[in-house]
Length: 183
Image (cartoon, rainbow, N blue to C red):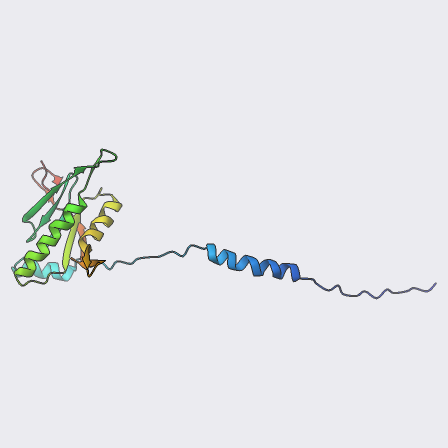
């Protein structure tokens, strides 16, 4: 008895169909992919050294503030002195009370114009909000105070208002122990 060894041949891999699948699948997946766009907004946080120095030396307080309270927004200039109050308005679609960001933009444009007439080129604003203020409200306020849409040479552009934004907590009235001095 003779044992015969069969020689085993290695099978050839046929990857043609796999390559065809990849040639079709990769471009389709790339075309259907959603490319995300992330916008980064630089914020300026209050400096501890500057707040300590401000207690030692009396300085003229010329900061512009937007205070977001529960029932209104208040523009203060100089800080602590109310310049304009913007109460909440009723939404035409839902009937709920919402902040009036359109009027806020118009009021800030007027403040910018008045400051420019006085020879001041102010670019910073301090947004003060309550601890329970909605995140979307703060973001919308930041977008509103940063720029506004205007028409220049038959095209709509973003004009700069106050791009240097600082965030902080709204003041609390000690007499009523409620934010913003609302009684």
